[in-house]
Every structure is written in structure tokens, then in C-alpha cells.
Length: 184
Image (cartoon, rainbow, N blue to C red):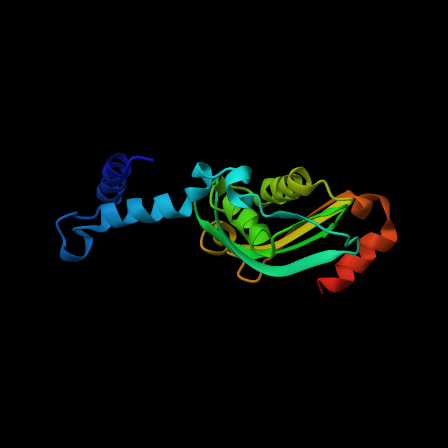
């Protein structure tokens, strides 16, 4: 992402909404906005291998591992407005576990892209499956979308929940229910 190009685009947006780029509060706004967008979309410059960084370890553990309430911030690909929420992730290891912080980093890698929540949920589950080949993966995301709160329908109390269940979480109702009870 070229900072200069992004800065020029933000300058054009600001001018086209009727503002004066010479106004005191806006003098450096195009550059600040461009830097913010680079930060918010840094997931495009990351890969699963980079994020996991070999933090996969042999383990005899075979019971469910759950990490819940991982905060996430993303931008809706339809309006480029934020959606903010949390992810809950579980997996059933099969000889390998992944470093705890790597789970949160995987969430961030996909959240820091122009995104829809439905796809992000799938991408996170697929990435964990690819990284450690567990017996099952479950991902649930609940988020508030500013595109529903600030514009359009303007529903202030709406929350979207998505989930993906792979392997044992899809096949076994008991496993799925244990997960759902743990993330309550």
C-alpha cells in the first residue's frame, strides 16, 4: 500500500465531501487517514506461516482447548465502516497444539482486511485446521456493525453472530454442545 497514493485519495475524498483541506484541523488529515488505513488493513501483508511462526508444538493433549473473548476490529467490505466484536475459538488437538497468542494473531490477520464476518469466520477456522490438523475446530464471532448502526437501518442494539464447526464439532452434537456451553 503506497502511503502517497492513499494520502492523495483521502485528500480527494475530503475535498469531495465539501471540506477545505487548508482548514487548520484538516491540514495533515489525509496522511493520518492513509496511515490509519494501512494499519487497519495490515492483514493483507501477512500469511499464515508468518503469523504462526513455527509455534506449533507436540502434545499428548486431546481434550478441547478453548480461547474466548478475543477482541477483533475489522472493516466491512461493503461500506468500509468498522465492525467490532469478539471471537471464540476451540479445537481438539491431535498430537499438535498451537501457541496461544498465535490464535489471536490469526484472528487479527483476517480481521485486518476488508471483510465480511461470514467469510472471516470460515477463514479463521480453515487457518487453524491447516496449521495443526486438529480433530475439529469451532469458531464463533459476535460483532456489532457500524454499517447497521450509523447508516441505513440504524439499529443500535443489533449483534451479528456467525459460527463454523469443522470435524468433530460438526459431527458430534455432544462436542458442539460442550463448546457452546464453554463460550457462554
